[in-house]
Length: 332
Image: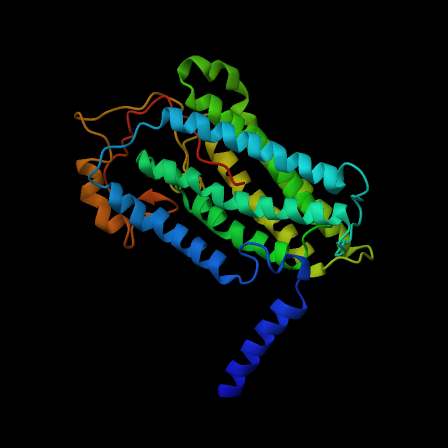
């Protein structure tokens, strides 16, 4: 047993010290995976347990102006990262067919590595998406897909940043940041109120846009299975599987959310909460997060969670905050 533990520790240090990119070893959060892992685990616990518990007996916050500013900043941040990915490789010398990682200290290679770090950092700023849902008591938006995706992405991007900060798989980040530009712009306009809703008539096509993104990602990654390319196959497979998994999850959501004249199945889309575009209603002068929420709270967060929904026999009642968008948050 002692030998096994020693071998595991030795293998870990060998992996971190000898097989990672030495250029990023001293960068913030890059020396060890454990800080990132701890933050991700706390995020999941806060999203599903601690946050709703703290808000149980509190009124929802009115965050309209905060959301407008936040989504504007995220749009600008995503635009900058997208620009940096283009300028450090994808707009010029990067190949869409096979692009090895440049581990040199070439200024362009270092620019790409820094861009990868900022993309990694952006995965933490996206945690505010969930925080704002919880503060507004819109827990139905905090679906299983939402939490799993946001909770896993920082750790996934950390591994890419630690061992391959550049090259073929950064195409995934390039597409993802472009999608984020569109998505955060949509949420900014949605938060501005009903009179601006006419400008975002195209929201139905956002999920289709996301699914196209996932197809492009796994097609771009899996082409390396058929050609010889000096790029880590493990990262190629890992990123490609991300695209396949989220394609299926989002296609399930799309079929449920936009099925014409069909009643949504019991699982409400399985992965993401499906909400009506109609005005929210109030029953008996209270919302689902006052007395009714308290009544089912204990079972909801022990064994009553079903894909982001509270399980109870009561008829779901939505909140009165009708100026916010009616779609669940995206997978970024």
